[in-house]
Length: 250
Image (cartoon, rainbow, N blue to C red):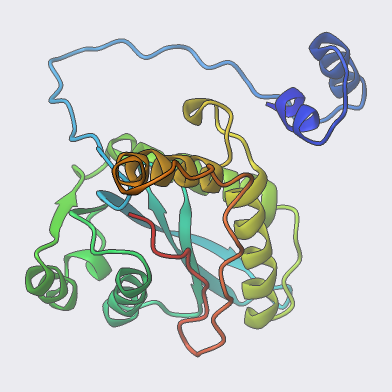
């Protein structure tokens, strides 16, 4: 992955040389994990078929420099791997969760499925009413099986390794600012092997172009595919929902 990132930045070097330098500097190495074997028949989980089909939500925990803890609600699109929001707060209730999701719906589209664990913020009455009124299906994973929400678990590990563990937060506002900067960079510049080594925003833009191309051909001359990432999302300054979201796609 590091070799791919350096190539995107214009650095030309053999991947073996990069790995050697990586080891010599004593940087963190990805450990190769043993492959799990199936011990019983498993039901295949529903796969997202388009952008805004399935959103995954979860919480991560961290702390400020003075010892106070905070939580962060993470929301991703499982199809494009975009991080739609990271909402930071000392306390994140079910009402706060639904406000974040509602704002995302207004900026993008209403998802078909929202996948989560069995936390009280997700299984509560407020979340249930919000989903029912909008025709959203709530999919709860089995207790004790976080791998059933693998996409956001993988994202949360990246968030912790690349941002939370590397930063010192002196206040909630400082945490919001630094985490938002990382989120924008993640969406714009971090390549994913599952996306053909495109960044999430680049993949989403390509999908939007592919869906709009047939209509463009029937209406007139073909349009040129947008290059690079989508324009940066506007940063929300309204409290307490202090996150920025991606523009409507699809």
